[in-house]
Image 1 (cartoon, helix red, strand yellow):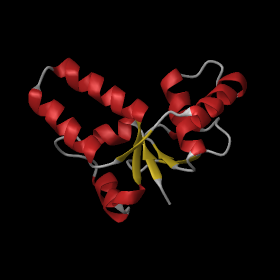
Image 2 (cartoon, one colour):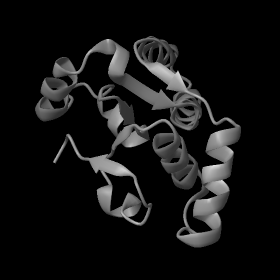
Image 3 (cartoon, helix red, strand yellow):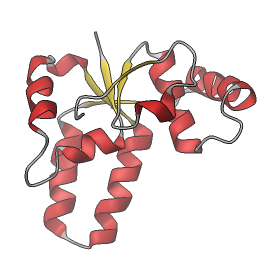
Image 4 (cartoon, one colour):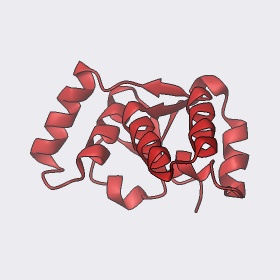
Length: 130
């Protein structure tokens, strides 16, 4: 099974003391099944740039290089439009895009905020930090 790590989950890895349960779970998932989205990459890069700390930027780049990155392509755009028009009229745009990427690629979304993604049909969600 392939997993899509959202921004909160992926950024947890960057903490000086990341969640033990997250680290434990990540070690059980083969590298080929560890994914993030291009949306998450952009969010983490923005946060790193705001720190103006070169070490933080290097850590982010190393982290992003250690996972596969799923694109927001035409199929994801179609799912995004369906979600936006039906179940997520007022949802955060980035979250809706991440959900669309997860559903179209048959990923299980790993997030610290499972309740925020409960409205999306056919989206499997897990919290590895709780």
